[in-house]
Image 1 (cartoon, protein in one colour):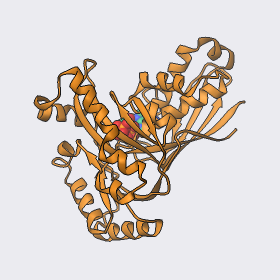
Image 2: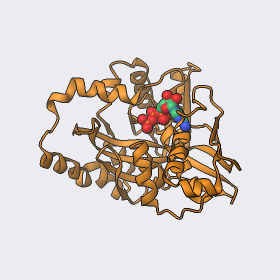
Image 3: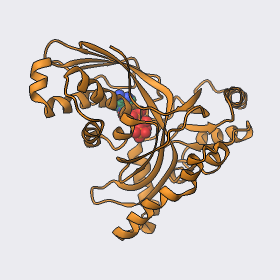
Length: 315
Ligand code: ATP
């Protein structure tokens, strides 16, 4: 096998609760993550020499060693020097469809695709959990991006408990192209403002993380109750992002006014998604938000929840 085409879906957070600090400097989280159909298209080809190269079609995404896709390939070369020597490096082309720095795990899913792709190109035969373990070294969202679907994510987001996957639920996603939120900034600001109230005791932390399993969002998902899911959307990071980003507040209000059944910021933002009743309803909500906010800087997508993560589309 010389080349691969891979579909790398974005994620949204249906639920994001910050429950405390960790010794490694990250936060203890309790989240429900969901894959969506909006995806980057990746192509990976064995380079025939030692080179690892990344080419992305967007100017605001680096093509150098800082690209998460490059870092994923370099990590695999480091972990599997024999296979790297035998098969050589990879050329990675990314056709970006996922908005950048938007709280949609765009970089993480590209990295997840590279880990899966290299496993195949180098005939490593790794299990999904082995790939996820490698991914967790690079970024907390990468394990989820590999498996995708619907999952509870705890720890720093890398500990996954898959739920029966949701699909065919339509959403409209909005993001101002000129706006970006640094994930590190959002969490740091949250710690500064709310750190005093964090749970410190280990047992209480574990109990709080476990509580998400029996929480209302998970119940709504298990019952496939879209209205209930839409009414239980929650994101702690809104508390620090909304006061700084008036456009996010305006976008949420526009979705609500347009008749979406629920709306919330995804991850650290600034993207906002709105749950709709049907594909037709989603198109209507999109049109109404567009007429409320005619600014061409605002990108709007109609997409849907999907029950898969990284997919090899052909080889
Ligand atoms: P998360 O939801 O995981 O916090 P995000 O969606 O907010 O991530 P990304 O789109 O992953 O953010 O981009 C964050 C930063 O990473 C950007 O500044 C971008 O330049 C850089 N980056 C590196 N590699 C990639 C990549 N393959 N795709 C997108 N951004 C990348």
